[in-house]
Length: 91
Image (cartoon, rainbow, N blue to C red; front, side):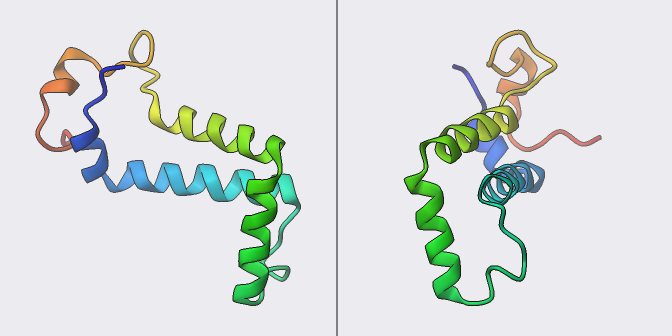
């Protein structure tokens, strides 16, 4: 699996995609709302519940996988051009 991780890690949109994938998946699977996480102890309990639930773990892995792959290339690898980038490509 050839992915230019160095460039991905430099791209803020990569991190937004990962965070949204995890937070949205966990909150949807556990039925969380903003009101249900009003303290740090509730947050840690929700995270424990998420990690303890195999359905949530598989759903998060799937969501993160979908945030990582480049749908414009065949398979899960980056294109030859993308592998040569030193920083995210400008629009």
